Length: 135
Image 1 (cartoon, rainbow, N blue to C red):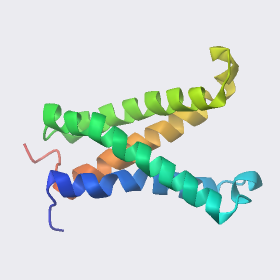
Image 2: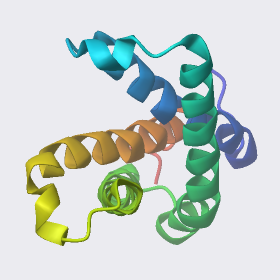
Image 3: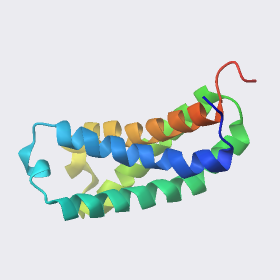
Protein backbone atom coordinates (compact mmCIF):
# COMPACT_ATOMS: atom_id res chain seq x y z
CA UNK A 1 0.00 0.00 0.00
CA UNK A 2 1.27 3.44 -0.93
CA UNK A 3 2.11 5.66 2.03
CA UNK A 4 0.22 8.93 2.30
CA UNK A 5 1.53 12.28 3.44
CA UNK A 6 0.57 13.51 6.91
CA UNK A 7 -1.93 15.93 5.35
CA UNK A 8 -3.62 13.21 3.27
CA UNK A 9 -3.83 10.92 6.29
CA UNK A 10 -5.33 13.73 8.40
CA UNK A 11 -8.06 14.07 5.79
CA UNK A 12 -8.96 10.36 6.00
CA UNK A 13 -8.20 9.11 9.53
CA UNK A 14 -10.71 11.27 11.49
CA UNK A 15 -13.57 9.65 9.56
CA UNK A 16 -12.78 6.22 10.98
CA UNK A 17 -13.63 6.79 14.67
CA UNK A 18 -17.17 8.06 14.01
CA UNK A 19 -17.74 5.29 11.46
CA UNK A 20 -16.59 2.67 13.96
CA UNK A 21 -18.86 4.22 16.63
CA UNK A 22 -21.87 4.08 14.30
CA UNK A 23 -21.22 0.44 13.43
CA UNK A 24 -20.79 -0.51 17.11
CA UNK A 25 -24.03 1.20 18.13
CA UNK A 26 -25.94 -0.47 15.31
CA UNK A 27 -24.61 -3.88 16.36
CA UNK A 28 -25.58 -3.44 20.01
CA UNK A 29 -28.76 -5.18 21.14
CA UNK A 30 -30.26 -1.86 22.36
CA UNK A 31 -33.27 -1.20 20.12
CA UNK A 32 -33.66 2.48 21.10
CA UNK A 33 -30.47 3.46 19.26
CA UNK A 34 -31.47 1.54 16.15
CA UNK A 35 -34.94 3.04 16.04
CA UNK A 36 -33.64 6.54 15.32
CA UNK A 37 -34.44 7.64 11.80
CA UNK A 38 -31.80 8.04 9.10
CA UNK A 39 -31.77 11.83 9.42
CA UNK A 40 -30.82 11.60 13.08
CA UNK A 41 -27.99 9.19 12.29
CA UNK A 42 -26.67 11.52 9.58
CA UNK A 43 -26.74 14.51 11.95
CA UNK A 44 -25.03 12.51 14.69
CA UNK A 45 -22.36 11.25 12.25
CA UNK A 46 -21.68 14.76 10.93
CA UNK A 47 -21.35 16.07 14.51
CA UNK A 48 -18.94 13.28 15.43
CA UNK A 49 -16.88 13.82 12.27
CA UNK A 50 -16.60 17.56 13.01
CA UNK A 51 -15.45 16.83 16.57
CA UNK A 52 -13.03 14.21 15.28
CA UNK A 53 -11.46 16.62 12.75
CA UNK A 54 -11.26 19.40 15.32
CA UNK A 55 -9.53 17.17 17.86
CA UNK A 56 -7.21 15.73 15.22
CA UNK A 57 -6.11 19.23 14.30
CA UNK A 58 -5.75 20.47 17.87
CA UNK A 59 -4.35 17.34 19.52
CA UNK A 60 -3.43 14.77 16.87
CA UNK A 61 -1.18 16.94 14.74
CA UNK A 62 0.92 18.15 17.71
CA UNK A 63 1.24 14.53 18.92
CA UNK A 64 2.70 13.53 15.56
CA UNK A 65 5.06 16.49 15.59
CA UNK A 66 6.23 15.79 19.16
CA UNK A 67 6.48 11.99 19.08
CA UNK A 68 7.10 11.58 15.37
CA UNK A 69 7.65 8.00 14.28
CA UNK A 70 6.76 6.19 17.52
CA UNK A 71 3.35 4.57 16.94
CA UNK A 72 3.11 3.15 20.46
CA UNK A 73 3.37 6.56 22.11
CA UNK A 74 1.15 8.25 19.52
CA UNK A 75 -1.56 5.59 19.80
CA UNK A 76 -1.37 5.44 23.61
CA UNK A 77 -1.61 9.21 23.96
CA UNK A 78 -4.46 9.38 21.43
CA UNK A 79 -6.37 6.64 23.26
CA UNK A 80 -5.92 8.33 26.65
CA UNK A 81 -6.90 11.74 25.31
CA UNK A 82 -9.87 10.18 23.50
CA UNK A 83 -11.11 8.77 26.81
CA UNK A 84 -10.69 12.10 28.64
CA UNK A 85 -12.27 14.23 25.92
CA UNK A 86 -15.19 11.87 25.29
CA UNK A 87 -15.85 11.64 29.01
CA UNK A 88 -15.83 15.44 29.42
CA UNK A 89 -17.99 15.90 26.33
CA UNK A 90 -20.59 13.37 27.50
CA UNK A 91 -20.52 14.81 31.02
CA UNK A 92 -21.23 18.26 29.57
CA UNK A 93 -24.02 17.00 27.31
CA UNK A 94 -25.69 15.00 30.08
CA UNK A 95 -26.23 18.11 32.20
CA UNK A 96 -25.69 16.14 35.42
CA UNK A 97 -24.97 18.37 38.41
CA UNK A 98 -23.08 15.78 40.39
CA UNK A 99 -19.96 14.23 38.96
CA UNK A 100 -20.52 10.90 40.71
CA UNK A 101 -24.00 10.48 39.26
CA UNK A 102 -22.35 9.27 36.06
CA UNK A 103 -20.47 6.39 37.71
CA UNK A 104 -22.57 3.71 35.97
CA UNK A 105 -21.58 5.08 32.57
CA UNK A 106 -17.83 5.37 33.19
CA UNK A 107 -17.01 2.08 31.49
CA UNK A 108 -19.00 3.00 28.39
CA UNK A 109 -17.26 6.39 28.17
CA UNK A 110 -13.86 4.75 28.56
CA UNK A 111 -14.55 2.19 25.84
CA UNK A 112 -16.05 4.65 23.35
CA UNK A 113 -13.54 7.44 23.96
CA UNK A 114 -10.62 5.05 23.81
CA UNK A 115 -12.00 3.50 20.64
CA UNK A 116 -12.20 6.90 18.96
CA UNK A 117 -8.62 7.85 19.81
CA UNK A 118 -7.23 4.41 19.10
CA UNK A 119 -9.04 3.94 15.78
CA UNK A 120 -8.09 7.33 14.40
CA UNK A 121 -4.45 7.14 15.46
CA UNK A 122 -3.96 3.55 14.27
CA UNK A 123 -5.40 4.36 10.87
CA UNK A 124 -3.23 7.47 10.66
CA UNK A 125 -0.10 5.49 11.54
CA UNK A 126 -1.01 2.79 9.01
CA UNK A 127 -1.69 5.30 6.21
CA UNK A 128 1.55 7.22 6.76
CA UNK A 129 3.72 4.15 7.28
CA UNK A 130 4.55 4.88 10.92
CA UNK A 131 5.47 1.52 12.40
CA UNK A 132 7.70 0.26 15.17
CA UNK A 133 10.39 -0.35 12.57
CA UNK A 134 10.24 3.08 10.88
CA UNK A 135 12.64 4.96 13.12
